[in-house]
Amino acid sequence: MTAKIATATGAQHAALLGLGSYRPSRVVTNAEICEHIDSTDEWIRTRSGIIERRFSEPHETVQMMSVAASRTALERADIHPAQIDCVLVATVSHLWQTPAIAPLISAELGSTPAAAFDISAACAGFCYGVTMGADMVRSGTAKYVLVIGVERLSDITDPTDRGTAFIFADGAGAAVIGPSDVEGIGPVVWGADGEKFDFIRQKQSWIDVLALERAVMPHLQMEGNPVFRWASFEMAKVAQEALDRAGLTVDDLDVFVPHQANMRITDAMARALKLPERVVIARDIAYQGNTSAASVPLAATALLESGEAKSGQTALFIAFGAGLAYAAQVVTLP
Ligand code: COA
Image (cartoon, rainbow, N blue to C red; front, side, top):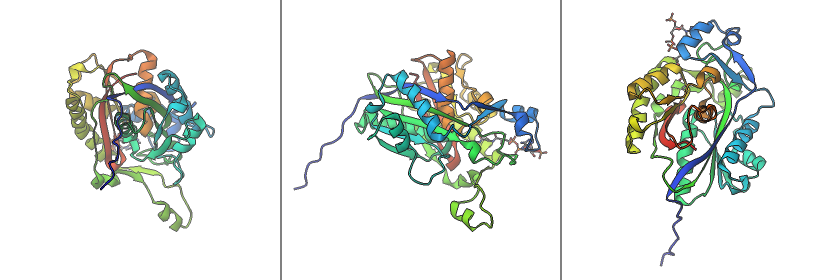
C-alpha cells in the first residue's frame, strides 16, 4: 500500500509586513552620462523622464545593498532575521554563475538555515518573488519570506551605448511577507514571451566572451523602441487583469507602482487604465533611473517614506522586462 504523505498547510492569507530600500550614494547626472554618448540632458529628460540616477560605489555591493534594505524591511515588519524561512533574491547583476547571492545575504542577516535562492526574471523578478513568497506562506512552505530586488546595473551597462547608458542604475528594495488575517497580496497575472528573448539581453554568453580575442564584459543591450511599444500597449492589459482577478476596479486603488522603466510608459499605462486623478503614481525613475528588479520596492518604499502613500492603502504593482517576463498583483501596503 502506498504510504499516505501529509499535506503542508499554511496561513489562509498572506501580506506584505514591511518594506525597505537602499539607494547608493553617488548621484549621476545626465550631463555626466552625456560625457560618453551623443545625447543631451533635454533629450534624456523628455524621452525617459530621468533627471538623475544613482550608481554604486565599490563598497555598495549587491550583498551590502540587499542587507541594508532587508534590515529596514525586517525592522518595520517587527520580524527577527531568525524567523525568516526563505530568502528570495531577484537580480541579474550578481556576477557569479554560482552560488546564488541569496544564501550569503541570508547568512549575513542571521537567517541561516532559511532556504535561499535567486530568481532570474530581470525587471519582473521582485513581483515574481512577491507571488512566490505569498504562495509559500499560504501553502505552509514558509511562515516568513524575505523578498529582495537588487541591481548594480552600472557594472553591466556600456557607458558608450546610446540606447541604454542613460537608463540603467543601481539600488535595492526588500519586503517581508508573512501570514495575515485578511488577504494582502492578490492573485498574480504573470507570464513570459520567449519569442522576444532578443529585445533585452546580455550581448554575449560567457562562452562567447571566452572565444573573443580580448575578453569584454557582456553588457546589456536593448531594442528600445519595440520594448517601449510592447510595454506601453501590452502591460496595461496585464495590470487591468490583475485588478480584475483581485475583484477590484481602479476606483478601489490608492496607489499605482509600475516598474520604473520610462516615465512615458508609466503615463501610457495610467491613461490606458483610466486611473482616477487621486491615485498616487510612483515616479521614482526621475531621480533613481531604471533599477530593474529593485525598482518596484524602491518606488513603493519611497512613497511610504514621503507620506504620499499610507500603510493599509491598496496598490497595484506591475513589473516587466527581459525575457520578456512580466508580473502584476494588487497588494495592501504595509
Ligand atoms: N540621445 C539622443 N538621441 C537618441 C538617443 C540618445 N541617447 N538614443 C536614440 N536617439 C535618437 C535616435 O537616433 C532617433 O533619431 P532619428 O529620429 O533622427 O532617427 C530618435 O532618437 C528616436 O530613437 P528611438 O530609439 O525610436 O527612441 P525612443 O523614442 O524609442 O526612445 C528609449 C528610446 C530607449 C528611451 C525608449 O525606447 C524606451 O524607453 N524603451 C523602453 C526602455 C525600457 O523600458 N527598458 C527596460 C525595460 S525593463
